[in-house]
Length: 115
Image 1 (cartoon, rainbow, N blue to C red):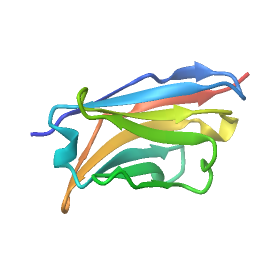
Image 2: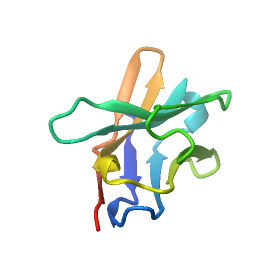
Image 3: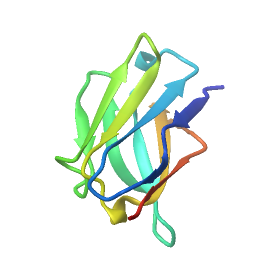
Image 4: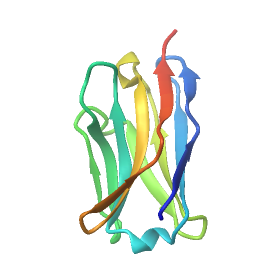
């Protein structure tokens, strides 16, 4: 059973930076892709960033040029570098790993952007 553990959330001010980490219990190159999704109160879960096994990345429109996804295979960890955060980035952020049609989610971590 794959396990994903997210760390790094919290309360930050608008315009600041934050880095989220997601550590997997398996070799991350075992997954077709890994990434981050988020869900704000009253809204649907949406894509933030994905990275596939080949290193190709994909971002949600609202975070392009501000957020960067990366990975460290030796640490079995992916990261989400969040720069110039905005109040609308406030949400629970979930790590996700996919092998074919099998998807595993982390438990989520709260990010709140407020002055």
